[in-house]
Image 1 (cartoon, each protein chain N blue to C red):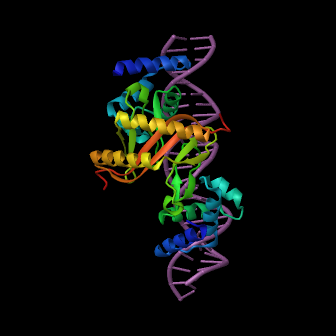
Image 2: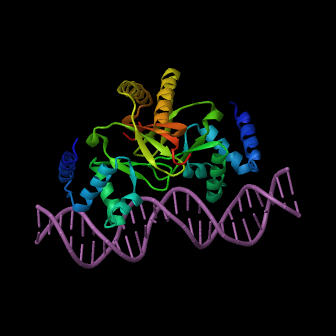
Image 3: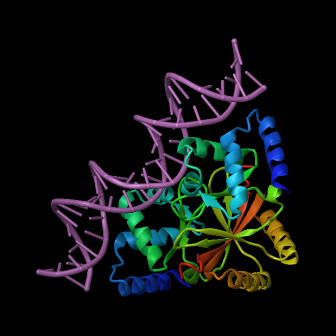
Amino acid sequence: MEVADIHAVIESRLRAADQRYTASRRRLVELLAEHGDPMRLPELLAADPSLAQSSTYRNLAVLEQVGAVTRIITRGDHASYELAEDLTGNHHHHLVCTSCGEVADFSLSPAVEAELERVLAAAARKAHYDIDHHRLDLVGRCSACR
Amino acid sequence: MEVADIHAVIESRLRAADQRYTASRRRLVELLAEHGDPMRLPELLAADPSLAQSSTYRNLAVLEQVGAVTRIITRGDHASYELAEDLTGNHHHHLVCTSCGEVADFSLSPAVEAELERVLAAAARKAHYDIDHHRLDLVGRCSACR
DNA sequence: ATTCGTGCAAATAGTTTGCAGCAGA
DNA sequence: TCTGCTGCAAACTATTTGCACGAAT
């Protein structure tokens, strides 16, 4: 999806929740779209010092609620954020560096991914869980840290 | 592995790190072994009120460092802990309830697991990451919460 | 006008740490 | 008797929130 389309979709989702697509919210989406890989709060604030910390936390929470961004929990100090998969059209997983906390994206082949979906659905059924999504992370050290 | 053996292995790993296998550390391991599924700190403290909060945090950190327990990060308020896989001999994944924060275990068939290992190793190689382990979580709602 | 967003400063809460006394080898 | 462990209370830090002002519709 084009960046312009992403903005349009997010705007309509916000509107549906009686929220406005303000300049700082748009800025957050732009930063995440440019960066590609997930970003942590300090990175976002550093990338645009006009962003206020508390508003950024609030805006990311709003954007997460309307399904525009995804919050990634790692064992690092800060959570990371990225654009939602259905906006980028790019189902993927994460490589988490235990040393510097950086999070990178990677993908599996569609065939493997489809099989994974299938066996996970079966496991969820057996455990009587209603599954929202799955999360597959590789935990280790990035090329800079190893 | 039997519980007695687990204690023996943990004791030797602690010794190798110049640490002692004290009563409260042993108690934590017992509680986790009995419970099976991952436990959060308040559950551990409630299960044995003689445990002090700060010492429990410290002891779990020590046990994690010597590879006796694993800390599981969820988006819930508290982290969860369980015995390390190589002690229970039970490779598995997690079902995380977004509503109550409960974490349950599930497994994939050895065949699927082996294939997953293979494609993940390939992905890590491509990204120049040194992989420690993988983490596969299903995020949704447990039977009690849905 | 009314509702929502912003930014500051203060609060919250899980986790960590300093310290003085206790215990194991 | 030296080194590590404990428990209390205080500190730390990512994140959240109260509030008064500004902006959008």
